[in-house]
Image (tube, rainbow, N blue to C red; front, side, top):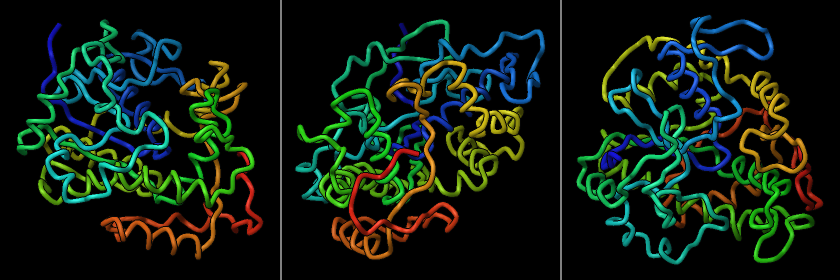
Length: 333
C-alpha cells in the first residue's frame, strides 16, 4: 500500500460546512470520472446517464477522498484537524498545551489513530496508509501541500454544535464531564467547552497562515454559504496549486449540495448524513440564538488567547434569532 507523506488539507471547525464540503468534493470527483448522480428532488440525471451512480449507502464521509482526475494530488483530506506543522509554533501560546478539546474529533490527524488504515471514499480501496509524521515535517518546513481552514463565527459554531450534541447518539457527545447537556445553560457550555476547543483549533491555522501565507488559507463559512461556487473555486485553486476560473462540473456539484437535496438524501438513507443523530433527526441545522453582550464577552475572551477576531464574519441578521435571556438549552431545529 502506498504511503501518503504529503496531502492537501481542507480542515473545518465542527459545524462549519464539513458535510457540504465532503459532498461537494465527492460529487465533483464522481462526475469528473464519468459518473452520474440522480437529483433526489428534481429527478434530473446529472452527469453521464450511462455512468456509475453515486453510492450514497457506501459513502462514509472520508476523511480522505480520491480526487484523481480532478486535482493533481490523488487524495484530499476533508475533516477536523489542528493545522499540520503547528507543533513547532505552539509554544508561543502557553495556554494551548493545557487546553483539551471537550469532545473527540476536533483533531483527527493527532488523536493517535491507526493511520495505516485511514478511511478513503470514492476509491476501490477502503483505506490508505498516511504518514502523519512526514506530513508534519513537510508542513512545518513550508514544503507541504496547501492547507485551508473553513471556520464559522464562534458563537454560531457553538450554538450549532450544542444543538448537534444534544441529539447525538453517544454519551461522549450528549454529556459533558458526566453531566447531561440537557438542562445545561448555553453560556456555561460556551465558555467552559466550546470556545476553548474552537480557539485551540483556530489558532493553529491562524499562526501557520501568518508563517506561510501562500500555503495556509483561512476561509469564513459564512462566505461559503453566501457564494458557494465562487468560494469553492477559490478553494480548489488554492488546494490544487493552480488557477482555473471554470472547474468542470462544479456548478452541478454545488447545486446537489443544497439543503433540500441533502435532506432528501437523509430521508432516503433513513438517518442523518453522518449517522450520529438519534432517531431519524437531520444532520442539518437551522438558526442560532445569542445576543450582542454574549458576543462581546466571547470576543474579548478569544482576543485574550491571541485570536484575531477581525477574521470572523458576523452571520447575516436573517440567520440570527433574539437571544432567550432565561438560560436554557437551545432547542433542536
